[in-house]
Image 1 (cartoon, helix red, strand yellow):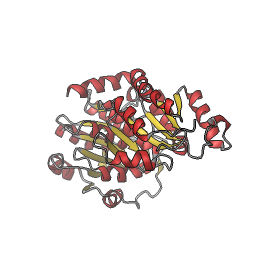
Image 2 (cartoon, chains in turn red, brown; image 1 turned 180 degrees about the horizontal axis):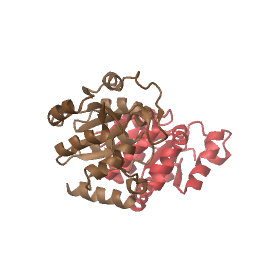
Image 3 (cartoon, chains in turn purple, orange; image 1 turned 90 degrees about the vertical axis):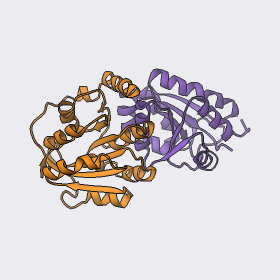
Image 4 (cartoon, chains in turn blue, purple; image 1 turned 30 degrees about the horizontal axis):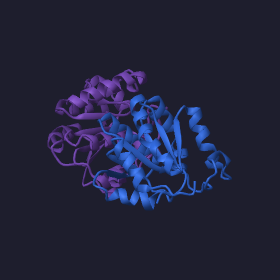
Length: 168
Length: 188
């Protein structure tokens, strides 16, 4: 559990899933070692957005145009995007793949046991919405990423990949 | 002030193989005025039309993407102007149908109606080409040229309701039509 998450391994998994676009709004947990390197990675095109729900719609347009994408945001932005997620993601059957930083989550503690209210409620909300989600916190968790993205596109449904600690 | 459906009929006459993403009243009208599989109406949440269209434009740089936005909608997602201008897709044309009201939601005026300058917002956000039209003859005269310019382009159409068209939200958000759109765009 104390082994760090590898940002490089996460990026390789995302690429393995056929993602070419990353739609992003900086999150302190993932900015330094995920987003900043992605901005200069020639395998990806990064679209910086001003608001997370905007990003969700861009991912949906990319899907309609035949491209795979990843939405890289913070959990607070996910909470702010509930209408878009329910109407566009779930009801609109758009495979929006969200990599969501759980800023402030205590290391090794499941989000449901966090002292922070927002962190405790985010996964249960997705469960009510019927959205698949995974916690990516240890090196072994990284291998869940590509299959989860593949399932999202196979079933035209959103998925959330919660980043539980800062990738290095 | 122009009748919105008359404006859209002008656009339909100039349309070649452009993808058109439309929201709310403009969408209900557009699917009658210019029917076809390359109409994207599956926006789902108010304010999000231009962002869906940006995704389409990035996925298919070989196709011109026109979004028919509303002023109340754009107010919900003003940041999209900055996002679009920043990534600057050359194939992106942002048409705003500015009527000053929430027409679908009871006809209440939008905040700042008649005072806010949407073309000014777009210009300051960084759109390199910005136009305003209040007269149908001007729109008819200039549209062909504008459609051949590099984007992102912002066009503020000063409109009011014209003829009544049937509302059909089920059609606008139909998954079957969205899948038909995806197939048609793949083959276009």
